[in-house]
Length: 127
Image (cartoon, rainbow, N blue to C red; front, top):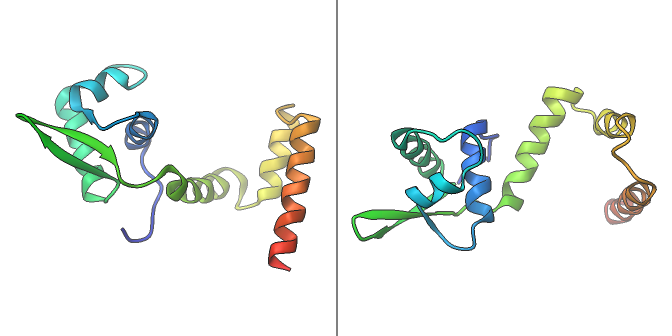
């Protein structure tokens, strides 16, 4: 797969469900596992076909249908989503992102200590 780009929300929802699944899912199983409002089966199949074209999903024949599995790992995708989020909401600034977290009281003292330790380790690795 070439450069990984941010997925549209509907496709990302499918990927999250496949990433969390212990085994490949049929379209019916995927439909039942997806959160929120149910989609038409044709819509789901269209989204799966798009994900397959992008190299994110593979399908394997099972009886008259298929089972779908994620071939793009969540860890491979997260940098693309993070870069997009930083650009769209925080002007590309990681500092602005952390500042927004701090303003919502989402960071505990332990979180701050872990972030500081991680940043120190990152400095050592790059320095």
